[in-house]
Image 1 (cartoon, rainbow, N blue to C red):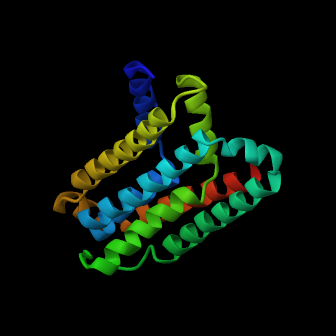
Image 2: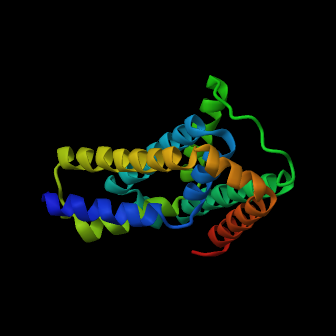
Length: 203
């Protein structure tokens, strides 16, 4: 494995991270609603789940999905259901006042689990990882290189989401969100709902 291949992989990851998907949406909203710590914990969950999908992609889980389409369908239905649940919850609470920033351990754990579930709920993340890995890296790379790719992926995600949490956890960002909370929450709910429907009805 060449350093240039790892750099190309990281650039692809960063491009995917900044796209408006459910992971980024959850990370941004959690930071604005619950503060820096919750945003960082959400990012840790998102990064761990993404690294798990990359691990499974490197182990050839996409071939399993090809052999057993029902397994992919089951995961896809669960993922779509979870995104739709988030969309409905956020929409219904759009008019609620912004809660005080949570700093307790249970809130941090909930943020971590939410991030973990959002990325685990989308098996297309694994298919994306498979496609990127096939294009960038040699087919038969050693086990040590595979481990490096997985650790690298996790660290890139953690650093990116941690950076977003630091940038958006300022009082100015929170006050700006507070002024337009109902609008922003309904936009976030609509996007999550559309992503859930897209996951549900596309192959």
